[in-house]
Image (tube, rainbow, N blue to C red; front, side, top):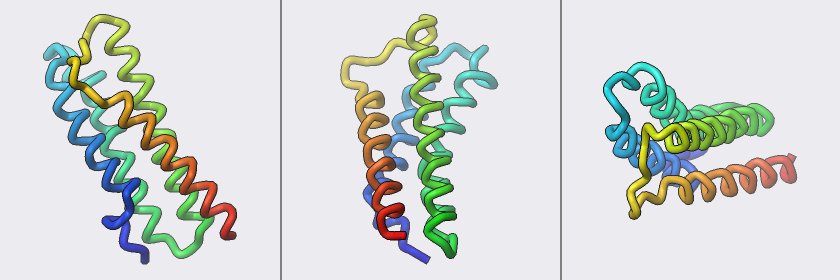
Length: 119
């Protein structure tokens, strides 16, 4: 088992989840069980899948969970775009969530590529 808590990609995933929780508080109450719930589930899924993958015995299984985390990044990015473009959410000037997502996506791509190269 690898120590996932030492991975920068996992640490950034935790920061992403926390930032998402802060941001979705702005969504209207009627979105509590729809877009708000979807966004927080996708955000929590990112570091959760990185952690779960680290417990797997093969690099192939680990990559699979990293790919799920990557998919959750794209899901959260899409939901963020929908929330903003539909007028449900306004990104504060100091909101770095889109940039954090972009960085997490790049880190996951790099991590996946490194695991593929090692196998």
